[in-house]
Image (cartoon, one colour):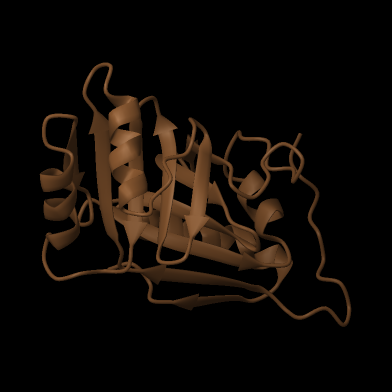
Length: 188
């Protein structure tokens, strides 16, 4: 059964906003048996590594975990691969760090019907009780792999750079019954 079409509520602020932005994305992975040591190193950098399926939203960064003993850390862009280089140096012998900034694109969907739009495109239960702020998962959406992160007032989507335009266009199409979708910084 398909989700019912929902008409915008009269008098409600029209639409949703879709923002696309550049971010430094570093994946850090613990060497076998060294996750606690890597967590300690991260804490020394003011980054709390969340449990599997969770995200920590902090000032200046988002840390999330959708694979065991691997974390993605999103920060505002720095010059070159500086973020990854700092993590590589800091976790040498305990873990590995890989720069995924050019391989993933960050999309942020906000507005009154975010969950209703996304539920039409993926199999995850996005009800607030099942997927509260701070939840994170990897799933298939619009036939491509994405990572979803529930923020307090939005949803963060990470898609491969090669498929980000497809996800962006899919969201624009899927959002039409809910009002105007404003896009900023469309994926290139």
